[in-house]
Amino acid sequence: MLIWIFKARAFFYTALLLLPLSVFAQYDFSFPSDSDFVSYNTQLLGFRNSNQTKENDFELRIWFSNGIAEPSIAYLFDLTNRKGKWMGYFYSFMWKGNGDYITKSRKIKNANLDSLFIFMYNNHLLTIPSQNVVITRLYMVGKQKISIADGDDYRFELFTPLNKRWYRYHCPKIYSYNYDDSEYQDVVKILNRIMKIVGFGGPC
Image 1: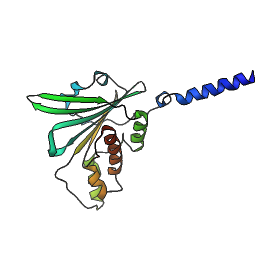
Image 2 (image 1 turned 90 degrees about the vertical axis):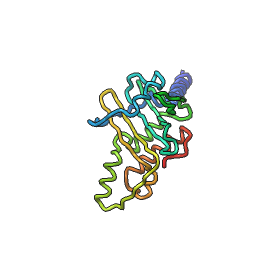
Image 3 (image 1 turned 90 degrees about the horizontal axis):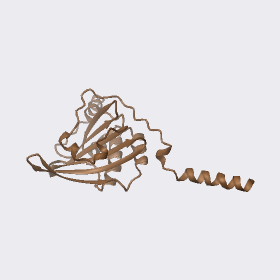
Image 4 (image 1 turned 45 degrees about the vertical axis):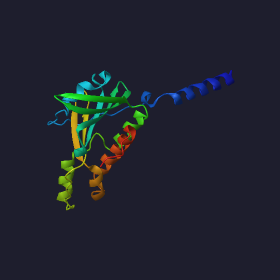
């Protein structure tokens, strides 16, 4: 009888270890809304996978481009959570003219999305201020001013059923070399992880 109990317990604990992290995860998706929020590239949102256009418990959109090198292409990393289940897609939208786009998409299968969100959360994904707020604060304390005319833009959009917020960064990696004690470091860490997943070389 005792042997059977020990075997049953061993089976139970082994089964627990094999369960996905999302079974246990209690995500905190709370953040304050931005009163000036306006959704970006709304003309492209209808081209996304239909599963991502439904109401989600949380959604993260990261838009980025390659500056003047590819002015007619927009890229979107779209991460959603509904009832504890993560789904991620990566899109490219190439403008053909006359309101037409060539859309390419692929589902993110080469990453643990639970771990990805936890990594981004620990790097302050939900609370990072926009670049203009950070740069103003840095200049006020005497940091040297730098200016970058070209380069890539990265726009973060966060959604829950109740709240929406956004922030934008231009060439955060270059700025991070000058401001190593700022939120630029968090942005670069997040973008490095995302761009590695989607097969890009990293942020500028």
